[in-house]
Length: 225
Image (cartoon, rainbow, N blue to C red; front, side, top):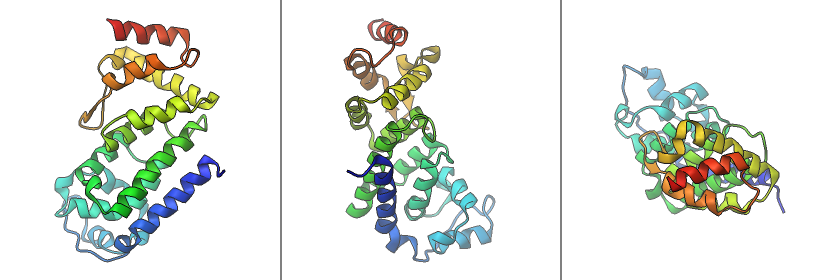
């Protein structure tokens, strides 16, 4: 069986292929000329592989009202944005919210399937390595916001009974329990997902030993308060 990291590379290659017909076609790009030069707009209108990485990064978090056709532009840039996101070079919660604004769930079936496959293979790959590139809470936030739920990601985490997955769980709890965030945790740049109702029962359902005694005591305190 192919290892999770190779599966992720294969999924990214499939993402490139799914978006290739759109990515390499020149398109008209109208945007904010205060934030972007004419040269920037021309570059964004051209082939995807020729666009500079710093320009992709800037556009990835820009608000939709900067563009005449934000969904079309974000859709074109998706393969490059996703690779930067996985490399931990973008702001996760903002990019997740932008994918929602771009309406990714309404894209063509091959595009949606390829992107969904990347999300799942990224998560499996991430859980199998500790430390990983990026922070587990950022990755989970991206996945939960784009999917609209934590359920599939938590299911995978529960089924991944490895030391690395449990180390990520401890890291996540350190963040969620800091200053009581877990009691009312929202995910996404605009708080699109209320995480607490899904997280608390899931945490309490995990097998004994997967959560340290001190962290489990705090989870129980929040859950039953």
